[in-house]
Amino acid sequence: MKQLKYILSGLALCILFIFNSCTDLTETPYTFIDPGSFYKNEEQLNAGLTNVYKNFRSMMSDYTYTMRIEECTELGQPCQTKENGHYINCWYDINNASSSTFSNVWKAAYVTINSTNTVLARGENVTMNDDSKAAIFAQARFLRAYTYFILVRLYGGVPIPETFTSSLDGLEIPRESVETVYDYIITDLEYCESILPTRGTSSYEVWRVSKGAVQALFSEVYLTLASMEDNNSYYQKCIDYSEKVIKSDIYDLVEEYTDLWYAFNANAKNNKESIFELQFSAEANQANWCHQMFGFANSFTIPGYGYMYYHRFGPSIYTWESYDAQDERLDVFVTKFTYNGTDYEFQASDNGYYPGVKNWVSATPGNAKFYDYQTSAELKCPAANMYMLRYSEILLNYAEAKNKLGDTGEALKKLNLVHERSGLTALSSMNQEDLDEAIFQERAWEFIGEAKFYYDALRTNRLGKRLKAFMDRGVADGMYLFQDLMFVPQKSFLWKIPQGDLDSNPALEQNPDNVSDPNIPLR
Image (cartoon, rainbow, N blue to C red; front, side, top):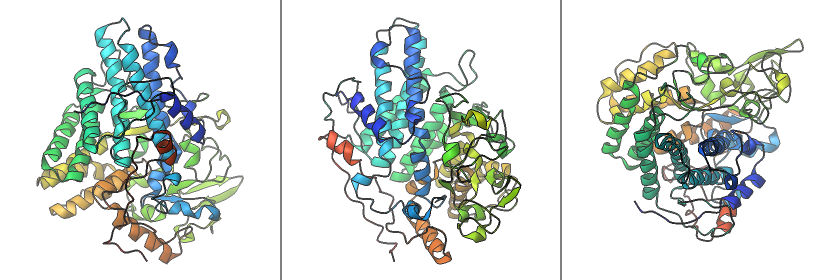
């Protein structure tokens, strides 16, 4: 692997990130640590690792990422006022780097990477047990690998700084190739797998990155590479790593789908289906504000539903309608409540216009995956965790890869484990093409709202076709805020590097302009 020796200005990136963030999520714990004053002993090195977890969480839980990545697909639908109609069309002006949709992600990613590099570099001189130090390094490298996995899928090749800095010097750092970034991810994960204990190991906290999390991320990485390159050897690697998770007998599906979610189950956190999740708590600066931003009400608090909700974003009406009536996953959607003696009920026939005929005050149902009904609204600290890797995803990864290599029988078995958990009858035998489509559709129903579907739709080259059909249907039906699609993404689509980051790093080269899919004409 090509190694790039360069110092990235972490302070500059931190400054950019802070001034471009709309919320205080960048300041939420795990507690902030000043890298310049730490790493003199084991306790301080652990605190530095906690800071890496904190920075990774800030990146992945920023609602401007989770909300927009869903709105780029058929699964998401904004609930704002008519002045914000462009939010239904993330694909406008996509070649303008000054209006980059995911600018916060780039900045937050390099904050996470810099904090990881700080732990690795300063930790070398800390005197402590070698195994304990290696475990700290492995956790940090996993979070770095996951961060690069987000970046490479959004932007393609990106800079790979090899160490940290606390100065503004030496900001010029060029991009590496996509291949080099994936090699770097794989090298980090190979190290992590060799070091980290399995979940449940004595004295190793359940929320920490474990060997199973590494293998699960490997499964996702190799499935992405297999799809992008149509490479059967990568499909086999996806199968191999998925099998490691499955055969570990550590993870399993939670029997009731609603028990996965903190809104319905106070014991949902770090359950047997969870492989890796972001930790939140009902304390100052530790709240999960996706609870509020993914809301279903207009700035008021509903008794029994936790802290106040906004109505920024929700699951698309068409996706909600696509569920089988017997599908228990429908139970996570909020479609009715009573407030101050008035009944409110969502009606799809409102076409997103509100207030609806039964008083509904948003454009879509609510999605309770981020909601917290457990914590008193008076605390103003919703505390639902966020899943990064779930066992159901590994089953579907395994099913997809097995089917691609021709083993439709084994693929169907794993698909049906997820399908039947939702209360539905097992799917019958089908041909390879239909099974591939069934697995993909199961992902939509299973992971709606979890910032997963965009990447699956893009790598399988379904995003543009399905998005075009979704928008055309909404326009034809007169759905609230819907507009004609302005751009149809292809499998090769990459977002523009944010202009501010290009300006601060002259060595960066911008991605070429994207071209709308010529096989799917616009109106």
